[in-house]
Length: 431
Ligand code: PLP
Image (cartoon, rainbow, N blue to C red; front, side, top):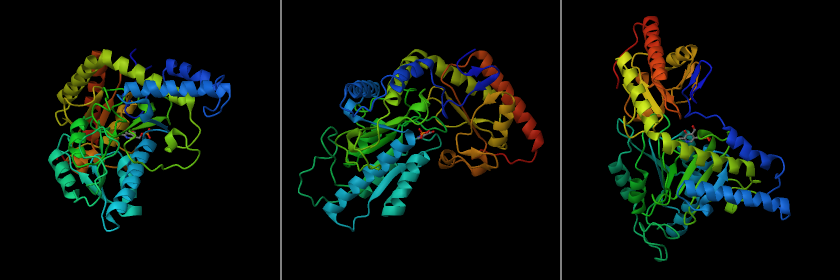
């Protein structure tokens, strides 16, 4: 039995969440039982906890190509994205207005396929502060339109009337970014949750920095699945979420370079450089460090096998169901991520039918029975709403065996067949 299979159930929804490994639970235990002290306490037990927290910070940073001081522990991907988008936007908006006055219309650039944690944080800035939110389009494989990004950044350029004390834009590693653009922030994802496409965030950072604008990367789906080198890529802020790579839910981090201005979203005791108040979760920090390290090591050993089994799965599905189409980039995508549309069918009905056949997968979007919304990513990629609603996502961390691939393909063939006969008049046509 592989890591995807418990009894007869085949779990192909790893992008939603993953189980916690025994190693991670064991690594957490001492910090829940004996070494439970508050890491800010001055007594010896407090110091023990503080040492563990700082070791976890160093390990997490090393595994993400960052520095220990960059790490801000949070309660997960949603909080990290909120802190990055709202916090950086608010801090830079104040700097911009101090320099240029109230008449400047600040903007935030995000891609059209961002997770709601980013997209709705940007919308919140619009609602409360009148910030203009610009969504950069993507192509039919969900690649961000780099020309559009450049165009929008150029539109935000302003003549600097400041005193020239700030750093020159584009030099990357200095203490701050230039205030020569009314764009507060660019926020893009490293890998898309719905279709798995990987974005060139290093190139995006390069282009964005030439306009003096900081870049936040939502790496929630990518962490533990592909290598991440935050500082080599010259990214300013990066979000991760532990439960996508094997910690308990409700744990994450925002990696944020010291040069990036940010306003805390939570007020309180000033933990985590004053940017994320609240008593630190030492056991949680240890879990993040151990789980990411294990996940990276596992991935290094199985990356090719995982990607090959994904390709076999995609081929098998296309073979048994000629209406199916792969969504996202067929190659430059997460190794354990296969996604499709089945024009003419309902993704929700397909999910339910496959579940009854022991295969747990997802549509890749918010989905509750009777309220199946078209996945936003697919709409942005140019699919019509009915086709977007036929989406199916299968995600796994362990390579699928040939038997598992055959089992999934056979189940999809049967499901598609039975659903077609249940709804013979459903419309076809992919886009
Ligand atoms: N960003 C992306 C791309 C995600 O896929 C998710 C969760 O699925 C999140 C953010 C939110 O993370 P969390 O569940 O830790 O709040």
